[in-house]
Length: 182
Image (tube, rainbow, N blue to C red; front, side):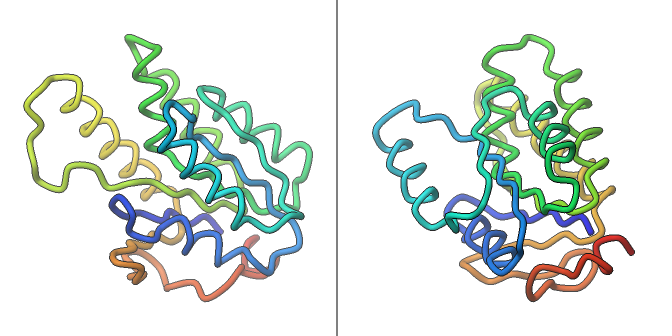
């Protein structure tokens, strides 16, 4: 079972995704945030504190596809939670003139994982940014979200802490292994 959890900034999307797997036996959590300043370091600290201690955590910058493949090889029965796709995209854009090969590799890796929760932001929501780089980021984030939504069984939008199913049914907790394979 693959689920994409979307939402705006501070919408509650990460907490919602984490709550779905709180009772799961095995979770491999791939975190993509970088502590580029004090405020971001504080956000990362809060995220770390609320995660269950038994979860395996990998923090990545650009190496998302490799981390996803490694998580599957190391723990094939575990759930994979990736938080967040748009932070990873910002890092890729910062370091690569042509981000498309990295985006394609990430989508391929993610869609190959059978027990997947991906958290991503809805960026822009109708506002056309004034500068080309921000427009490019917004467009790539939207395209990446569409690609993942197409390969996920469920898509959930979280607004003000309230989840709404856009595709599939609203999950209540970690699906069983049988459901994940179905």
